[in-house]
Image (cartoon, rainbow, N blue to C red; front, side, top):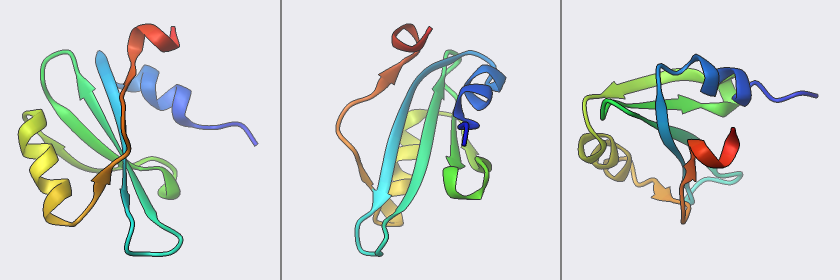
Length: 85
């Protein structure tokens, strides 16, 4: 089965990085993907729901607060656009 992630990343206006966030309380853990764009906007997608857009935030700090409020934890590291293309 081919992933929809590459199409999603190309669809993003101009992404700069992406992060994976997990809710470790649930099993299996719920996973969300945060995509940071060149203009500072951050979008959060749900890979388990065919990469459906969950929420958009105007900056990284607001997106991070939203995830932390729901007790998500960031998986260490980021994937940078220059590493993919």
